[in-house]
Image 1 (tube, helix red, strand yellow):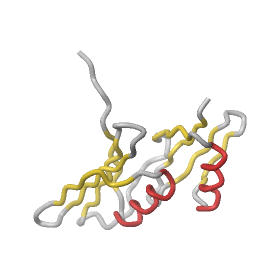
Image 2 (cartoon, helix red, strand yellow; image 1 turned 180 degrees about the horizontal axis):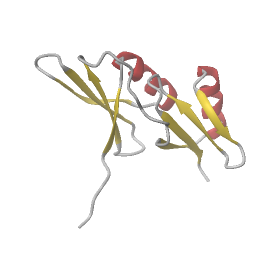
Image 3 (cartoon, rainbow, N blue to C red; image 1 turned 30 degrees about the horizontal axis):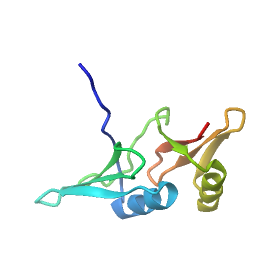
Image 4 (cartoon, one colour; image 1 turned 90 degrees about the vertical axis):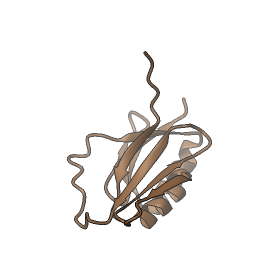
Length: 122
């Protein structure tokens, strides 16, 4: 039996803000969208040409409070083909939340507080 990872879900407070962040910070664009007929949710799958894996962003109308994402001990990792340019972009965006120079990695934080690891191509 084989399994293939296809997507990860993050619930977001403001879908437009999140889509803008992921596009600017990581080059992820909308692949498809599902909208509830009653307007209670919108699900947008984002990705890029580098991988089939997608990030699913879910907006829920009836969830006005901030999402509790715990102690941020989980994250999604991205390998950058130009680590220095990626770091400069994220520094300019002000979204770097943690750096580990000894490991050669850093993390950015999205508008809802999710951490995303940036790893250089080695």
